[in-house]
Amino acid sequence: MTKADDLFVRLSGVAAFMVPGLALWVRSGYSWGAVVLLLCSLATAGVWLRRRPGRDAWLLFGSIVAMGTVWALDFDPAQGSWSNLDRPAKYLLALPCLLYVLAYPPRVRWLWAGIAVGACGAGLIGMYQALVLHLPRANGFTNAIQYGGLSLLLGLMCSVALLVLWDRWKPWQRAGWAVGILLGLEGSLLSESRGGWVVLPMALLLCVWLQGRSGQPRKAIIGAVLVVVGAVGLMAFKANEVRLRVDEARQEITQYEARGDAASSVGQRLAHWGLAWRMGLDRPLTGWGRYGYEAEKQRRVAAGEAHPIVLQFSHAHNELLDIFAKRGIPGVVVLLIFYGVPLVLFWPTRRRVFPGAAGVLDAERLCLRMIGVLLPVSYMGFGTTQVFLGHNSGTMFYLFMGMLVLAILQGRERLRLQTPGQAAASLS
Image 1 (cartoon, one colour):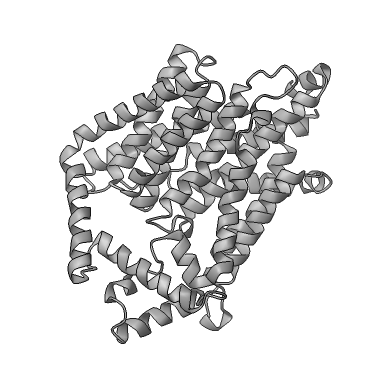
Image 2: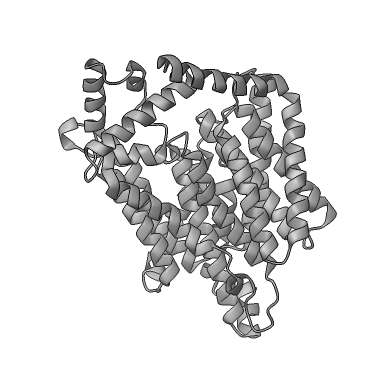
């Protein structure tokens, strides 16, 4: 490995730390690592353009292109604004970054450090905002719902890293991972985002099953119990607020069903969901488009066919229904592919986590794959009550965490297939 190669491997490692590590507790922290990757991709284009990324990389590449194309359809020159190109531009700029990290895969230790620091930072900024600034809902430097969801996801990633790789860590490292779990959960709790309450039990059950079927059932069950106990313990400090939020949700559902009252958090979501579903059925093949969606909402409100509260938001508060209304069934298919490709690529099959003829579990590979699976599964859960990919934080975290996990896995596989001498040279 040349000095230039070593430099770019180290820089990809720095980015692997920054993407999760700065995501929530630094302003625009989810973009810093992406900027490093983009600059490095431009500097090394002559290298990665000559390399074949492989089938898995092309699948991820294709899913990014497809989703970016769907967002690019929002651009309408007649509206006189170029701001709608902001979202598809992120997908376009992610493509060279993907090819760069595949050519210069980061060391996995950078990602572990980033996840731990990111979870701790998320919880600490949440505590500062709640206890010092006395904000009603902690939000990091983004939307409270986005912050709460990503903080929970980082906490869950910490739990996977701690439990699957338990034997690898020293006692002080185990303590650090445990703190990361608690602070990640605390950040989500302080955001008072109820979307995370849907994801937590679903993600825990999935992690227990995946870890258990890979030969670690005892660790999986004990870990899940401890996470639940920790979450319940943290909730005890905000028992009144949690109880209030649950009661509010119950009352808002009852009021909407009885009187059609949509002037509440739950009520307006139900109103949006119903409207988006009807609009999607009216144009199932093409959808209404972004501007057509807004215009048709206004028409239906004026005609008394929809509650006026739907005019306060530009999305349907549900990822699938929002894209169904705006882009029809083809848009839904692309979104499912965008979720499904990482799920398929990272799914920890026996062949993937028991490599080689010896049939010995590669715990680090299992851990990386479980983290990769958590990403789309969590986003599907968050997307039931929020258009998570409609925000910069949600888009950037999903795009860049996915490509980093894939690059690290492929880098490890490349080392495994090398001779001992080649592997030592690569690691030097």
